[in-house]
Image 1 (cartoon, chains in turn orange, red):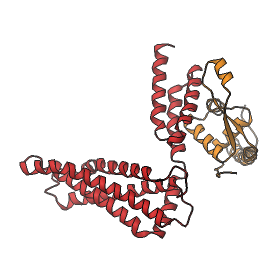
Image 2 (cartoon, one colour; image 1 turned 120 degrees about the vertical axis):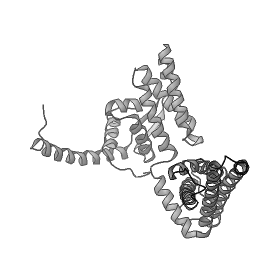
Image 3 (cartoon, chains in turn green, purple; image 1 turned 30 degrees about the horizontal axis):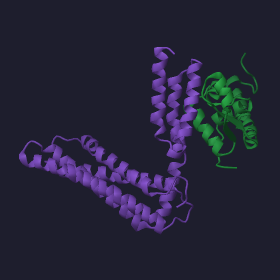
Image 4 (cartoon, one colour; image 1 turned 180 degrees about the vertical axis):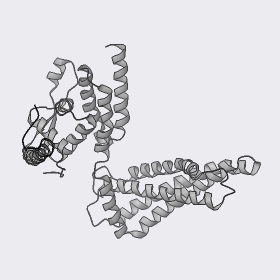
Length: 110
Length: 230
């Protein structure tokens, strides 16, 4: 495994988006609602830490659609472990916030 | 493509091109290729292409500098000081003296350009300032480089860390130069008549930036390729 990464909420969001099948920067931006200035640097850090891997798509699909080739990202096993940790951590935070805001843990407004 | 789309495309391409200057040369082509592909897609989808393009600066900083640059610089600076304090202190003093001297020369020249003597001083100060700043920057870079080679850090040190350390050193020396120049304007009130400290600092900022750029260029020229251990 490469460089360590701080397990922040945006990191968890990006990993979750990748695990859900979103594969390139703008796709992840749309899925997470995070700005480009957050998503792309996070992808670099996650790639450096080997939590995601990236590869260029083949020429053929890009040519067929008349656009430049994209760089696709995919979550690795280490990334899935990190995501599982993030889900555990942010589930606790989420429960705490719900208790503070709505009075009872787990209660969500309609 | 409509004229408006064409203008937008030129704009985001220009933004990416400018931001790419912060990306290391060996990674720049691929970095631009990815951003071009992303923004092409954003524009095709009618998304906020210019706002998205501005994120290229944050990404370029991430690739070019990294989030741990200051921590690395501090770590390397500490190791360098422990290994070769005289070299590092010498580099800082040379750079600070050059910048301070340049600042004082500029202060005197700008103030008194109303008579013949000060006009001569102004004319003479321009090459003097350039020479001082260039020599200080080059000397500092050379000393840093020699210090690194002769006294290898006890901690793992890469060329990136060396660059970061030299940037921090230049910034520190520049701050010292600004302080000295500001002190000179206070110490010699006649020469500094009509000046505020802020004005003085603004006038000194040019040589500071220039010397930093020269020192950075020199280190980049002499340091081994990015990522390679010294």
